[in-house]
Length: 220
Image: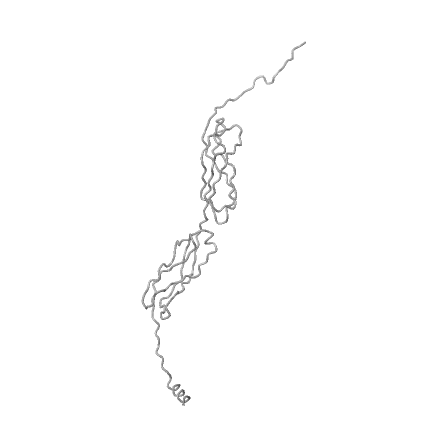
């Protein structure tokens, strides 16, 4: 009876042994979705910001960042914080921390600039016995604010207030513009308007003598 003969081909197997390393690698948050209209991401923070990756040197050194699970920001209109985990797509790698990560997405309104030209200055609360002798120019204004506030904002006229002024003379009238919350003025053509006011001249009324005569006859 012949013993069973086993033959292995190839007889020799070459095995590569590589240095095992542990390297801190930055964590990269994965963010998907569109924010609500008029909002934008100003910054993204992740904590902790690094993960220790352990594995063969040749593989570990290929990773410049390690991605997280997806954080959905669709329709978001304010700062969002959420727990995420590390995504491991390579079984030869190990991580010191898989799930204990927090991503904060800082959200703010989109800022825009908007120009307005040919704005009329409308006299407001001008005393009935006063008249404006100064030519009133048109106003130019450049504003900055959120897209939500400025997108549909109109500025066709601004009140030029004469409240409390009862005497003629020269006055510096400040131009005050009512703006939506969070909107500021970047430029304007006029801040204060120098205005000359004069009192109305009332001509004395003289009755027509012929009309008085007719009236006397009718009374007689």
